[in-house]
Image (cartoon, rainbow, N blue to C red; front, top):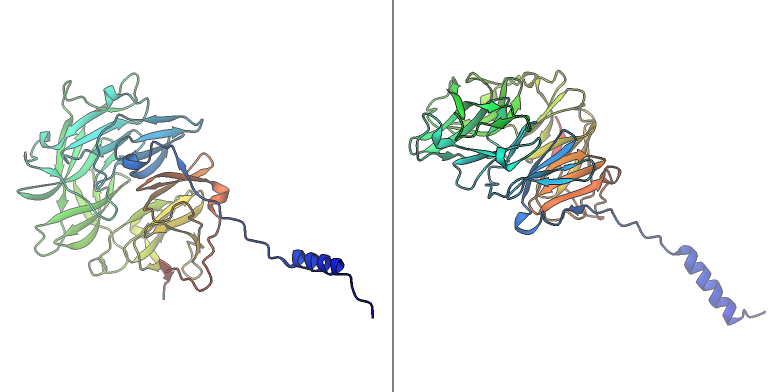
Length: 386
């Protein structure tokens, strides 16, 4: 029997080994940091919003915006209280300063520091001198602007109170809308107390924990004598309980997210459930899934995502169907151990605001599924209704 030459055996072994070598999985695509000056002590980024083909972001010192052409503008430096967050709408980015007495109204169009006027709440008729803005909860933003009407809550030695004020917002040649400069005229035109006509015993302590501008007023998560009560508050100060087809008082519902789909449907999350309204009306919300975590939601195009805990992102599959609704875990490389505060689609990229800066990824890469190691577990934030 012929013996094979040692060199032939070596080549044979090498060839077999090469053929059977395992192909390694490609590295997941990581989120990349946006703008190095949004890091360190300036890295505290809050909510995001898209208006006028711009992506606006709130920030502890320099809120600002990006343009579709790659431009970047920052508003004047201030020391904002990020425990309250900043409200962004089509005309203003509004942020409270650390003294919790002063609100800065940054105009979002043709920004100039000349028009970034301040409102001291103690100058509002009927507000005590020792008043400060009351901190919200449920992810902040317990204040909000709807056209010229501004809802906020203050606390003082006399207790906690929510007010609606009609602001003197004027048109200027260079900037679309600005808050009246106090040196030039009256900032507040009318003050409207909120009429909480709620049948709850001992309702002497009222908190507004989270507000969402909605139609001619706000959807508000409120606490009356520590009992969670969701309300629709209109600009005239009337407040009514939002019906959900079940005993609202017993459910203790507090809205965490309120999002319209591109086709006008309404979705909401609370401490315990995910809701859906085909009509887009908050009064028609019905539960479609149970939740065991505080879950915030955002539409990225026509796809719905939720972010829970610190750095976990899911896509919600079949989000209109209570029988087939499901979750898909998305890749979060680059965001590990950061606190995700908001998500927004802009100019073909997905942007994420965190407590340590602003991060981004191409839209097509954002949908990459995260593979959980064998034997690992991920606590799902929702489950189908039983």
